Structures are given as structure tokens and as C-alpha cells.
View 1 (cartoon, rainbow over the protein chains, first blue to last red):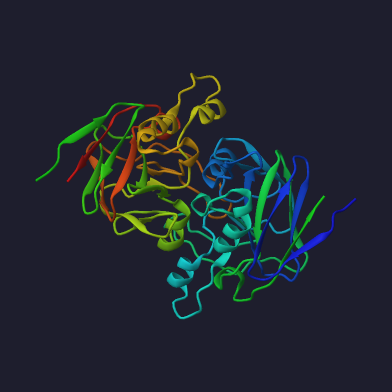
View 2 (view 1 turned 90 degrees about the horizontal axis):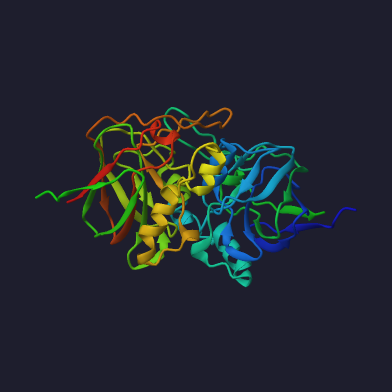
Length: 196
Length: 196
């Protein structure tokens, strides 16, 4: 039986428990939007998703079906079990008031995914300084292997595209509908998710 | 006047203060060795170097002279002011007992740079779980921009090669002579450093 689909309004974020064995599906309902995702051990939030450990053990910077997301304690937290897009970023940090000031000096400052994650995760005992690099679902960050240069392009996701994660342990998940201009081609759309 | 050159013995690590304006030079005295470096705000160790924020603001995965190393609070911690190698990795986490078990199942387990950093940084109030991805000086991690695949190759550093960082704020630095087989071509050599 499928769980209910929940919508995350534009430029906002949520946090919720995900139990071992459950599946989380993150959906781009309208297309060209991305979602920053964090995962913490529900039993101890100092135990947290790690881009570096994931790159170590998966031996790739590009994650899709079959790849696992590892923690700072070298444990598997999630596995990608279905992915209709295959484009995600695990290099860049969540947009924040500081990144808005840096990249968009002429635009209104927004607290960004960082501020949204911080507020949503605070009730679970997560401090702002403990927010690591998120898995940026559907975010399109091409990089050049010769120069290392990277850039942010609009997500290639179309309406209804989705990615499904299976939880290996009991987790607290943080998830956003992205707030930054470059990350979603200047459109601020919702993100949806479902737990099965 | 130059500071004294200090040698970090093979497969070990140290931590020390570095004041704003001071320069830290990390030297590969024998060649083909790498050094994991961490930086924490001396006034508050929750404020720490961040690979993701650095990739955000420097817009590259490859860091060399002129690039700055940013913190989780979007502050510049260090700037690279001289670099005779130009090959460093900021993607992979420090080697640890877990990475030894994973990558070298037939070899003796070593606590690795992670264990060495944890012990050296403990007196400064840094907990193991708070150790982020280090800047892996001279570490050679080619990646493929199409597939994302990465691999670890021996460092290209020759005897006497070095990189110099200028501190933007008062810091606590963690620094190792790397312990893993792949990272230094199977040789375990010392690393040296100097503060000016």
C-alpha cells in the first residue's frame, strides 16, 4: 500500500522520521526543481550522512540506482532503489543567507535551504553548525575533470520524475524545495514526497 | 624570519594553533606522500572547514594558489598563497579503521588519518563525529566528468614540494602524514610543516 503524497511548498523545508526498511520517494511534481536532503541517525544525530564517505565507498561523484549513501561513521544510511533522473549533486552545500548575499547581491536575501533545514531539524536536536553537505536531488552540477570547474545548471527533471531511497536504519530526514535561483532555473516550485 | 621545520612521522598526526596572518607551509620531504589537513576556528571548534562551502564559493573542485578554504559558516579560513604541486583532493574523507577494513581486507587495520586526527584534536575539544572531509594535500584523485568515477593515484609531489596557506582567522589545524596504501603509492613517509 502506498503512503500519501505530501507537498513541500516552494522555498520551504520539512523534517520527519523514516524507519529502517521504509522507502522514501522524492518527486518533482512540476519539473525543473531540486530538493536538498539530509539524513541523521534517529538514535544519535551526531551520526549523519557524509558526502566524503559516500564518495569513498561508492567510488563515484555521480549517484543513482544501486548506490548507497554512507554516514560519517562509515554506515550505510540509505540506498537508491529507483531513479528516473540520474542527476543529483552531492558536492555543494545548501543555499543560505550567505550564499544569497554572495551569488545574488542584487536580489532579496532568503534563508535558503540551509535556514529551512535548520528550522525543521531543530526539534530533532540538530544544530545549525552540524548541517553537512546535503544530497541535492535532481540538482545539475556539471564539473570539468581537467580544470575542476563546476557550474549550476537547471535540473533535467520533468513533471513526475522521482527517486526512491530505502532506509537501512531508523533516520530523521530533512528535505526541501530549493530556494536558490540558479539551482532551479529561476523558478521556485514545490517538491513532493511519499513514504511507503 | 622562518619558523622551524617540524616533521610528522609516518602514519601519525598533530594538531596546533595557527594565528590569523601566520603562514603554514606543508612540505613533502621525500615525495609521493600526502597530508590530511583540517581547520577549526580556535574560538569555537563548531566552526570548521567545509569542502561543500569551498566548492560553492571557489566554483571548482581543484584548489591551488589563489583559492580560499571556506568554513561551514561561510567564512574564509585559509588562502593558498603558494603551491608547487597543484594537486590536492577535497572530496574524500580521512582513512580510518573502517576504510582499512573496506579497502584492504587482507592487511592490518590501522586507525588511519581519522584516528590520528581524532587523538590530536581531542585536547582542543573536537569530537570524532565532528571531523569533516579534510583537504588532502598532494592527494591525487582523478575523476571522470561524464561518469563521476574517481580513483586514487599516487601523489605527483617530488621531494621538497610544498604548499603554503595564509590564515584569515585564529585556527586550530590538524595535519597528518597519510596512513593509507593507495594514497601514497604504498609508501608511508613523513610530512613536514613550518609556521612563519
